[in-house]
Length: 147
Length: 128
Length: 333
Image 1 (cartoon, rainbow over the protein chains, first blue to last red):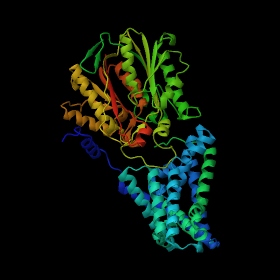
Image 2 (image 1 turned 90 degrees about the vertical axis):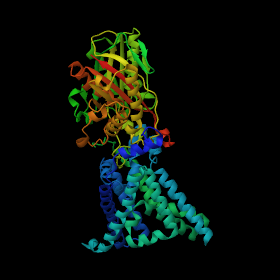
Image 3 (image 1 turned 60 degrees about the vertical axis):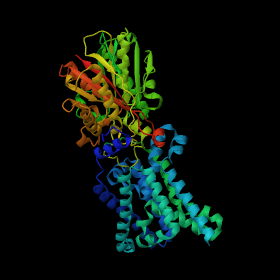
Image 4 (image 1 turned 120 degrees about the horizontal axis):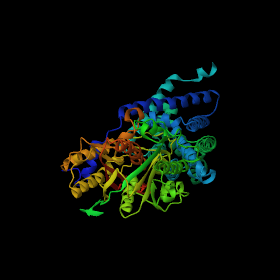
C-alpha cells in the first residue's frame, strides 16, 4: 500500500518517519529531578515535624515553599529550562502546578492585570482544580452514602 | 546542627525513589501518548483523588512521605482525604468543604505567588 | 498571461522581482544565513511592550527598508499584499496602517509570502506597475497563540518546528531586468488527516507534493530544469517525506531540493528540532539568501513552494485534522 492511499496509511507512514523522543534519557532525568524535588519536600517536612507542627500543617508548609520556589524560578525565566531538561520531573511535582499558573499569568500580562493576568492564570491549571476538586467531592459523597 | 538530626535519611531515600518513579510514569505518558502537559496534570490529580478515596494512596504516603505527597497525585489524595474527613465531621456538607480546605494553602499560595511574579517579571524567549 | 493545465499561470511579460528586504530576530541571526539578512534584532521585543507590537514593527520596518532600497517613492507603489499568522492578520494590518498604499490583507498560513507574490505577479502582468508584498511571523506571539506560554516548563517533541521571528518584503514590477517570475502554480487544499500540531511538516508535505506534481505536469518541466527547488517550512521530517513521495510518483528531486526551514537554523547547535516554520521563514530566506544568490547569478532557475498549515488553536482543540496548502512560483533570470 502506498503512503498516500488513505489517511490511515499516511499516518502510519508519518509515524515511521518521525523520530521518537529519547525516552530513556528523558525518564532518567525525570526520575532524579522529580526525586530531588520530593526529597527537598521531605527535608522541609522533617524540619517542620521537628518543630512540632502536625502532619497536615507540615504538608501545607512544604506545598507553599515549593510553590514559592517554583514561582520565583518561573519569574526569573529559569523554570522553563529546568522543565525542558527534566520533563515530567518538574511537571508532575507541585512545582509543575505552580509553573502552570505563573507562566500564563506572566504571558498575558500584556492583556491587562484583570482579564489578562487574573483571567488567564488558570488556562492550564484550571482543569486540574476542576477535576481534582470534583473527584474529591464525589469521593466524599460516596463515603457519606457508604457509612 | 539541631535540624540535621531531625532528618530521617532512610525516609529521604524512600521518598526519592517513589517520587522519582511517579515522575517517570508522567514522562512515559508525555513521550508515548502526545498528551499535553495540562492533560497529564489532570490525569495525575484525578488518579490521586481516586486512589486516595479508595484508601490505596495512604499506604504510599505512609511509605514514602513527601515522595507521594509532593507529586500532583498527592494533591488529589489530599483533596479526597479532606473530603472524607469533612464528611466525618459535618456529614454531607463536609464533602464540599473538606477537600479544598485541606488544599487551601497550596492553591492560595499558587494564586498569590503567580500574581506577584507576573507583576515583577516579563516572559523571555527561550534561547533553546 | 495564459493558463497552463489546471493550476498554473504562465506570464507573457514576466514581472520582475525588483527588490527584497528582510529583518529577523536574534535566534535567526545566530543561524547559518545571518550574513544575508538586512537587519538582525538583538531582542525579540525590539523596544516594544508586547510581542504583537514587536511583530508589527518588524513588518513595518521591513517594508520601509525595501521601499528605500528600491528607490521607488512610496507614492508610486500601487498595491500592497501582506499577511501573517496572528488572528485576523493584525501584525500586517497594524504594522502597515500608516503606509498609505492600497492594501490587500491575505492569509495562507505559512504560504502567505508566496501567495502574495503570486497575486502581485498577476497584478503586474495585468499592467499594474509596482506591487509590494510582505509577510511576517514571530516566535513568541505564535507560541502564545498556537501553543503554550513561553515560561511553561514543557518539552518540545523532536518533530516540533521553531517559528521564525522575522519578516520579508519584496517589490514586484511589471518592467525590469529580472529576476523574473515566469510561472505561478496555485495549490489546492490537501488534508491527509494528520492531527499532531507538533508535526506540521508531515501535515503539509502532501500539499507540497500535489503542487509540485501539478507544476511539472502543467509546465511539462522536470525536476532537473531547476537549479534549486525549495519548500517553505516542511522542516527535516517534511523534507524527507516529500522527497520520498515525489520519488514514488516518478520525480527524483533528491539532488536539487531543499527546505527554507532546514536552511535557516543549524539543527545541532540551535536545538530547533525539525527546523524553522512560519510566514517569516520562507519570506526571510527568499528575501535575504535567495535574492542574493539570484542577483549574483549563482542561481538562475528557482522553484519556490511555500507551504501552509491552515489550522488554528480552536480547530486543534476540537480534534480537527490539519489541512495543508502549498503555492509555487518559478523565478528565473
